[in-house]
Length: 162
Image (cartoon, rainbow, N blue to C red; front, side, top):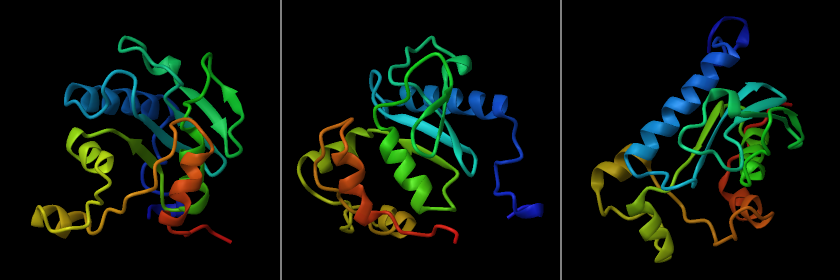
């Protein structure tokens, strides 16, 4: 933790966070982890607000196209609608006080395992298990529906502050 109980990364300006999200999104896209308009990224700006990619972001859109919402999912600023997976991000931010950013990507190998119904909790690649530990498999949920956070809720540890 940094001084004044500010979490790492919170020292950045909103403009820096906007640029970082776009840079990370481009990096993930170029490597095939977020094909087309799949996947989404967000950053907690302050305890009750987050900045995220909008519902559909074209490759040439930029930092000014990102959306800010409150913890209830209400759009506070931005010209576009929030991501269809906003509820997943809000669940994690509400349950994990230590989560300051979220990257929801679709790496092809992990997606293949998920589509086959296989959790990444076997020592198929020892380095992965040693590095990340057990990666559970959430039950299938139709993207953009309330089923997504419901399916993830049992897998998200609760570290909220009282």
